[in-house]
Length: 435
Image (cartoon, rainbow, N blue to C red; front, side, top):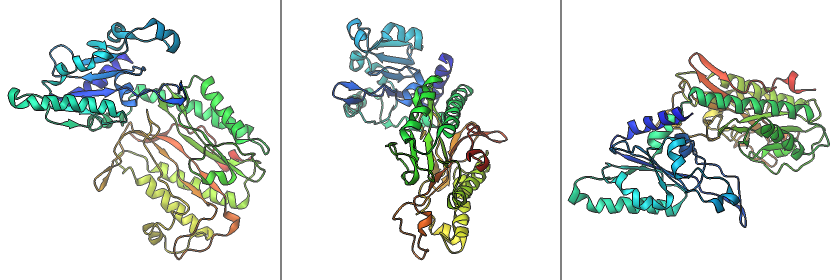
């Protein structure tokens, strides 16, 4: 991995030329009082360094005569390390992480100017840390004031996402190996959840079993708060309470992914708690499954990013018309978005270091074109939300449909010849999810 991090930094430096890029570590986050959440590094920072400590700054200065990669880190401190864990320290930052120079984080204001004064611009993401944002802006303003006398120095600040996120969008073999491992662990967990779900059990029991497998198999834990939603809870897209008892004729929607080596999987499955779909549940499930399969077929190099969504919307709309939940001509219903009371989210998002990973979806009026090495989710759904008002001129919703929520989601890699479904091992055919 050390060589891969170096290669990534070199790619960024080739793009910024005479610029200097600054990356700040993620802050710690308080759970309550003086107890912190488990630390999770900023994804951009980790992508370029592999360094997993707080209070750190990485600087890329390709124009500097001696130091192109510089790290500012917390120094070794035996007393604090006893309480809060071992630190890499300044000396090891060079040896382990390949920095050309490393300094204590307290020396940032003193040392940073030498890496900025000959740059033509600063690359920095204005993030959530207002104090650090102000620090960088002050350095920039100080150098800007002296520009007329020196005729050199940064004359602008540009967001690092413009040079970095297009790189993160294309996954290397190393990244794909980690994503496959994250997917494989989650596949095992979802299949286990299907086997143990039964009427009378609680949503949180299933959550516990899933997340137990995540950690047991070496994962970092859930990629995001697990959604285990029975019955009408499945109509809440981000339901995370997971505290209800499951009933015989309900469906269970599970949206849960595993984080492994900082990379994520993202899977959703919906199946009958009691082992058999009701007629209404089965009818809606068949529509969502058909939409998902046909949307996956649209994942191939050269297709637009929104091609899977367009396909999914068409199949869902046709199905809703067939069931009498919508009426009218299909193209007009789609154009006027009459399907939205039942399908209100998009079909895909990028996946990687972040669950909703970085990367442009649209270039002005033109959608991003799918390319080999990109990974995206395919996740159509139908939700007959209680108290939903149908769109104008559409039929009233028959109560027999109300409270049914269904989503089916897989992680899909764009390959040279089409696609690879990384999460294909999770059951989703009706014959496989019924018991």
